[in-house]
Length: 145
Image 1 (cartoon, rainbow, N blue to C red):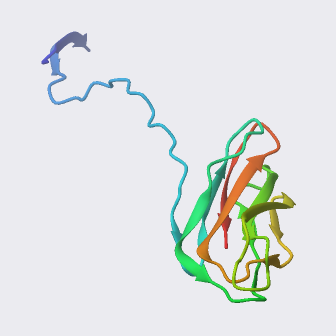
Image 2 (image 1 turned 180 degrees about the vertical axis):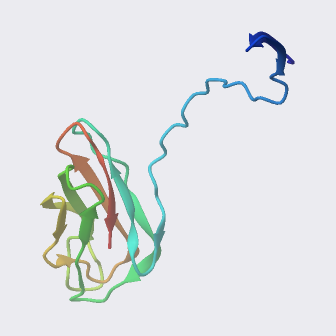
């Protein structure tokens, strides 16, 4: 759309074109998609949604193999110092013997960072995973290993 603006400046006739000027068009903000990226060495990234809900499971991309007696530890850090969270880590119930037992989740953290005690893993070959819950209205993106 070409517009011609006309005006008078100090007694002279002036024509100004607005051709080539982009007009602002309102657009909707993109929806936030919680990050799920993970790697074998660093764990992953989880999301604690605002308002106290539990976020989706954030799972590593490489399976962790154990043997009888194996334990796993988890640690996490919120990307926001203003967003304390609860953290849970996946583990198994039987640390000894050939059967690791059923999958279990144990809550271990409250705050903006934390590290779990050793959790039973046993003879499992499975993906490490965590879930996070916000404890305020802000929510948080959380890095874990």
